[in-house]
Amino acid sequence: MRIAATADLHFTPARFGPLHEQLNRVRDEADVFVIAGDLTNYGRPEEMEPLVNVLVRIRLPTIIVLGNHDYESSQDRELMRMLTQEGIKVLDGSAYERDGVGFAGTKGFVGGFGRGVLTAFGEPEIKSFVRASIDETLKLERAMSQLRTEKRVVILHYSPIRATVEGEAPEIYPFLGTSRLAEVIDRQGADLVLHGHAHNGRCDGRTPAGIPVHNVAITLLQAQNPAAAYRIFDL
Figure 1 (tube, helix red, strand yellow):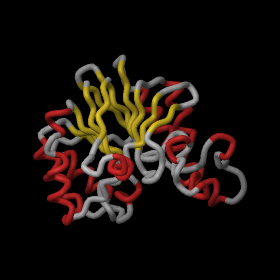
Figure 2 (cartoon, rainbow, N blue to C red):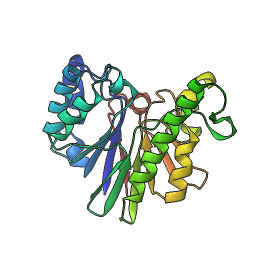
Figure 3 (cartoon, helix red, strand yellow):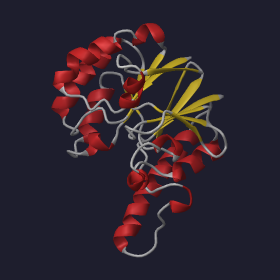
């Protein structure tokens, strides 16, 4: 299977023409299209509607997780409805299997990496924050446990490892992901992990167990090739 992947489109109606042109080739180059969150700028249905039109015209199976920007206006359920009614798969602690490849996805959350992971100690506000991170980790575990395929792909918005956020300001690393997600991935097993969110991070890294992790934020892809809107992976 050839998987085309991107993230952080932050779509606005003004980008309709350029993005449609950039994505025109994807159906000739891939079997599946993955978007790892931040489809919109402010999570508004009027932003999502023209993007859905672009995705439908691609005529390629499309799998998505939402990102933090897609939650900004508290209309995430409506955005999911708009996508799913057009046949686009939205993963939110859920799984999808196609042609012998399993996809498990959730948004993920923040919290830091390695020894710097924030723990649920102290004020109630800290405990609530950590609870949100753990809840997303449990959603990923539930999604991965549903897969029965030999080949497995994980789709997140936030990063599960530090390596693919390096390049951002070190002060914001804890807000770009959490290694709690990597613990689940290594325990359950996967062939490929895709995420976005860290616009100025690195493209490639690995979990502690050696599973490949790729940051597919469109800003990173276009820093290497201004015409690129996605990256192709062979699985």
